[in-house]
Image 1 (cartoon, helix red, strand yellow):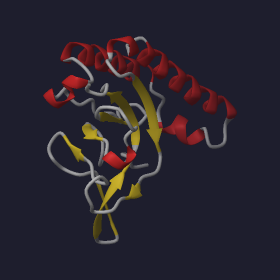
Image 2 (image 1 turned 135 degrees about the horizontal axis):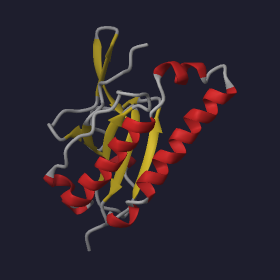
Image 3 (image 1 turned 90 degrees about the vertical axis):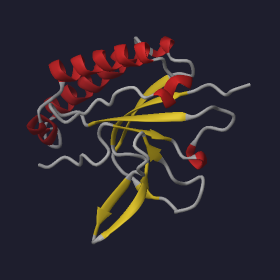
Image 4 (image 1 turned 45 degrees about the horizontal axis):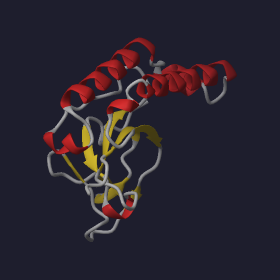
Length: 167
């Protein structure tokens, strides 16, 4: 089964419309999916300084990468979880462990850290406040039926770093 890698390894600035009110910028670090080998861990970028120092970000990414490398289920196991209760438990336990790894680092981040898995993206309007850009200046775009469309949120696991509001 093919894995959608359009968003992997990219750091998105959350669009204004979807950002929490009275907060600073929110960075969505897309690392990919839970199956073995289907992750790309992006390098820290200076724009994230308000939410995370390079050292804190690098330590979190290293621990997540190590966890994925040692514990991520196979694609076959994830597919079997549709029919097999034991496989469902394995996938759930993997996800609980991933959140535990992230929780060890939450105190390091100025505005907090959460991990969300997004299984569906929706098209967004081509107007200010709706669009997002990644660290390369590209929008999260999905193509299909011969057309490209800006989307939000990025598919897969997103480590969300919230910068505190500037006073």
